[in-house]
Length: 456
Ligand SMILES: *Cc1c(COP(=O)(O)O)cnc(C)c1O
Image 1 (tube, helix red, strand yellow):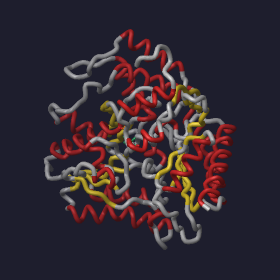
Image 2 (tube, helix red, strand yellow):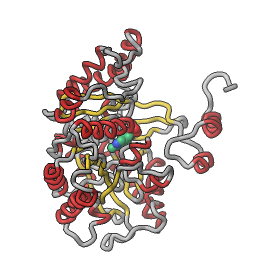
Image 3 (cartoon, protein in one colour):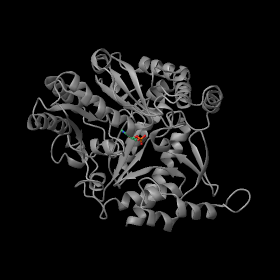
Image 4 (cartoon, protein in one colour):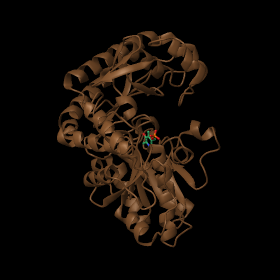
């Protein structure tokens, strides 16, 4: 940095291209187009370095549940940094923020879940899941139970374990994944893969893939099943109503652990505190992150049900696992303040009773657009899928090109949405107001019309 004062957009872009390797990016493309520099944010809006205001329809990356600019979280971090910026929770120690956050989370979690293991992110939480699931079965005297079943197109993070649990083919191709002992079944993606089946019939079929896989691997070899309540990164895939009840039946029948990845659905995204409450699930483990701190600081964790916790505590001896930043005091203080705001301002109730019903009505109306083949959503999650022919569900050529075009047009119209293939997805801050939802959909409609024009 040679220039005095505030660097210009061009200077920042050049330095970014010269020195910064980005997550999930094609760097040649990134360098050629130049990165968008986000400078500040407030409420549901972002401002870039060229002065454009963008409505953030993604809450950052599914995480800024309480919206941007809450000074209470900054104050909590500042106070905690002065008081105790860091200490570990290894070696017989703890500190007030970690204790208070664990107990506050346990209060909101399903009744049989009373312990929290802290991590630095959602990916780390899923690494902890693999360690904990396997440790649990060792302690039960069934060390041959090691296989974890995940789903194709599920997302559980980007570390070696997270990417292995997930079912993203493009991630598996880069790095010889999955690691041994992790296998995958079909996803409950009715619109894309249901063919001629009725939606509920397909939901049962997809759930029964779990039973088939258990029988194939061996009933005494399967340790756990992991899934997101609603797939997020895979394209906001809401399972048919028949899916989760059938999964519950199968998990109980074969007595395997159920891991419900709440990294997106947790902390109010579905209009309940956890997706497990939305679908009435009884998980043994729930990885969490994202909305846990509303993204203000990085933090994750695993909420541990009594079945696993009591075994680890009573007969586990030392569990040789943990992270330097497990329960980091500043992150925990911010998480605690985030929880307080979610509770005191009744934000989850607001999402369930007001914002989500309105958002879902607006999403449903998009089905009328000539480009939209399917709309889907639940709570504060939504998606619509672009097709070239509604009746046959035929896609546009170019595998995701239509989605990318629509996403770029959204941004030029002042709206951040993401494209997953040709599915346009949204996950706005829970605090979004009705008039801001109107603005979001006005911009989405305008962008869709422009997309249709350009595709013609
Ligand atoms: C984002 C995400 C993760 C990974 O979290 P990171 O904090 O990015 O490591 C895991 N599971 C789900 C469901 C996610 O959406």
